[in-house]
Length: 186
Image (cartoon, rainbow, N blue to C red):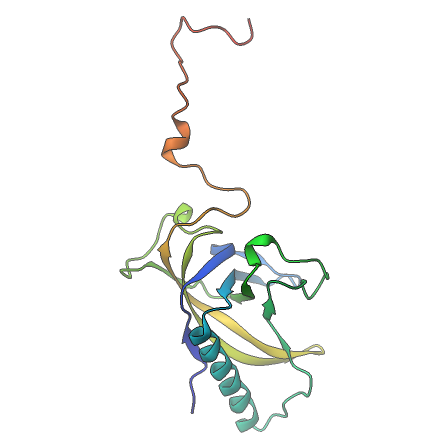
């Protein structure tokens, strides 16, 4: 039987909720991240395709009928979002976009496999790899192939997306807090 679990190549992380779960639209608490997968990473895309097919095969082997129209969580970042029809942001250009989640907290590690405990180290915009597990779902009229989040490995920092993060050098603004400095309110 083919594997449904894969490790991606280098991806960019966005909408990172890896340390604390957030409630989804049904109120289910989940850990999640959006993966920005370069379109040029054909090796990862081939692994994803094979794992998705393995998930479909497993579904059929269990005696379940495969729905004719399957949704997927892999989308073209140069296109529009599936649920609102709005264009993806500029950070998604040249990438495939995939949202992955889990009710269990994923393993979160550095490249040397030591655990990341400081939440500010893993943020939207940094780069890494993800371990994801593909499966077929058929729930409340929704049918498709998705992937669950198993683990995140940070490889390098990147330009923060969204709100950004504060670094030590941001505090070096030449501020003089001595008593004889001009009173700003004065």
